[in-house]
Amino acid sequence: MAYRFQPPQENLLVQTVVNGLYPPLLRIRENVGRIMVDPQEGAFLEELRGRRALILPNHPSETEPSVLVGLARRLGEPFCYVATHEIFHGFDGWLLPQMGAFSIRRGRPDRPALRTATRLLAEQDRKLVLFPEGETHMCNDLILPLHKGAIQIGFWTLERLRALGKPTNLSLVPVVIRYRFAGDARPVLLRGIERLERRLGLPPPPANAAPRDRLLRAGLAVLGGVEREYAVQPPAGASPDERIAALFDYIAERTAHVLHVSVRAAPTVSLTLRALFNAAFDYVDGLEPGTSAYEKRLHERRALTARACLADLWRVQNFMAISEESLRAPLTVERAGEILFRLEKEVYGKPRTRPLRDAFVRIGHPWDLSDDLPAYRASRKTTLAHCTGRLEQQMRALLQASLADGSAPTDFV
Image (tube, rainbow, N blue to C red; front, side):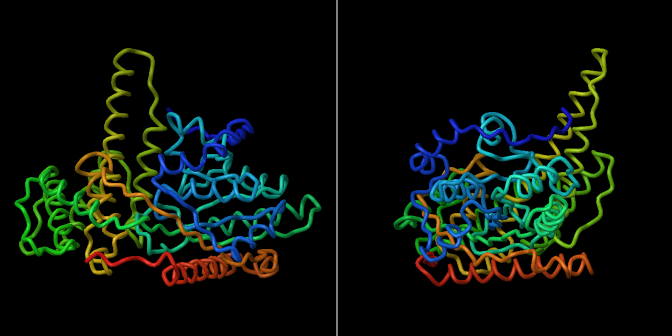
């Protein structure tokens, strides 16, 4: 089926039910018990009550949209959300528009989505949540380089406001969300690691084996299994990063060959992945079922092939969990949980070890993008880069502040 833009279809009754059941839903659906907001920083949002704003959070996992619903609930003012089109299916495909979300095709000039974003901000004075990292990356203590799209939408909104004769102001609100396990999660994680070792057929580890070594051993077993599946033979003595790179190159080349596309390598793996994802979605969207039984059967086979490519690309994120960069960083309890989450998704098809977490929210001081409008009119490219850099710097500062406060991680020893 071709891509079809999913507009927001806000339903007050659905939103009221979700808000009423929010605490148990958050615990059951996302394994989050509490949302902790600094009162002084919470006042930043209070000051924007009834005013248009771009809410710009980090996006380490799939949980952040649910946390943002909690912030909207506290403010008593529903937000709208930009969400990737990939998740608009099944029950979520029905629920998300009711909660004010609309779809966007990442990495593409999705004009209906961009028009909807500027309309909500400029014409309805709404608060719009947009994730400037563009990808989930399952790293609680990392901010990815930001895309310029969020800032671009902000400037388009200011231009639309001017055309409407309305005051040209738009507040940008940087937000950083971090998670910490509630209570001591180490016993639960150790049981999860032990269960994973048994599933992989690994011998019992030495009694004094460090969790980092056990995760690396399990990760290498997963990586070896994927290599055998794809018949990719790593060079003798290759490091985990070299093996991951070789496997990614194989999957990327195979995907491009199957889809008959040429995908240029991007500066980062995540950007290359996004280009491949878009190529796969474009391939599926461009398939025409035809009229004869044979043509319909051919369409089904091509669609299955493209979806198999998508499954391969999603797997890349799982085996990259044991990259040297991931394992070189201090192994906190939360980081161990993130690595285990990825490995379990590969081995079991879904994560099985999910201790209860608390979400710690840091909210930066809002800034008015209209102050940069003259510079934008003089040099769009330079100003977009400058404002995106400023936002990224603020988010990194919020993350560092979060690491130093009550949400600081616990070493896994």
